[in-house]
Image (tube, rainbow, N blue to C red; front, side):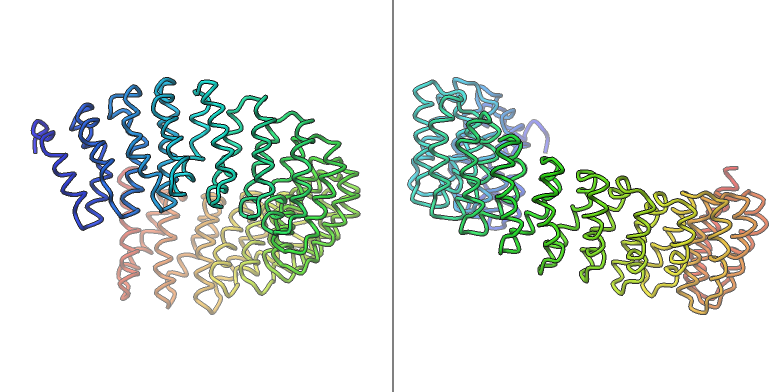
Length: 587
């Protein structure tokens, strides 16, 4: 179809496809709206396409969702911001549908369009739309309206602003909990656009209504509003209005509300200042750390380091640390896991002495926890403690527990330990590493689980990079090469993998003198899997060694493998031979 004829067809094609029974065709049509709009031109898009979309009552949520998304970026296709208002009617319809994700996308698109519209157009078109939705008979319209006030309000004249505040207040007292929830969710965004004089009076009275709502789902959303409003108010107003609410919420009968408080509390500390934090928020936080619901303790435990950073060390030691000790032996493994993921960050906050006296025993008890995730969370943050207490103390107190974990029956725990070995090695130094951890690294090469063996081979490479080829030549290479005679072929394959990883680190000389002869010997192995892995390893060694070595050693070995009875061995040997030929031709 030529571009000249195209404008005649798209609207007809679109209508046909949008009425088709096949949802995929309808979806395809909606996703091509921008192409069709370009073909129609701006005027016909405004006069034909948009009205058609407004009248299209598709019953499939996927199609409606795609339409809501497309319309959000449609301003260029209708003639720019001066015509943006023509996009409002179809989106207004979408704001009233039953499916939540369609409504949310329609509100998002309306916000995007509204933020680009001219002020006069907002007053003439956008604000009336918000008012219509807020007065909607069906609750879905009122839910959507709550998300649009922060776009409508700044451009409204004074009279309209008063009306919008009043409408929002009514939505916060709506009969339907879903509407009140939406009003609570969007209160922070709306409050950010309201003038400070009205913020203290109108918005705070709305907020207080929401905090006393009989539905816990509304109250827990009001908790989020506490943090948002706290940042907008002066500290003294925050103490007067927000602080009492938070203290009450921390004792709310619904655990979900207390859970939200535990998540948000540290943000409020910054809003109210140090003194109210010490007198009111610390006791509230301690209550949450000792809550009878595990979910609340998990949320509170996960924020313990952030909270301690806001306090001075004395307060943290006096009030928070006793709770942390209790949590480290909590009946819920998830609480202990949440604590373990952040507790290491307390070391820099509390300082060296408090860490040694108070935190180290907690670290040790968590390192010996029966639940693998708790142990892993401690290991992954060891560097934070090392910076505070130094390597000697760390090694005396925590290393025996780490060695124990290296032999843990859960393979994922062993895997995590292997991944942290290079980090530990760089922190502990070469001498210490050789004494305590060297044997473990070799032991892992013969683990029953493939992932452990593979990680162990990678670990040797990273250690060789950390401590240098000379150290590797002395401590790694001889032991690795001894294992090539292991009777089990899977372990021999691990050694081949280790050789291919170590060769680039060790350099050409050691590769030619020590590693390559072993690989060539293994090429005569009776197991086909070993032989085709030899071909792969030889291919990986080509860039490392001199061309003469490729000619005299690698190539003859590969030629021999190309005549192997096994088809896979022949395939990989031929691939490696092609690579050698390519290198030789290019040189």
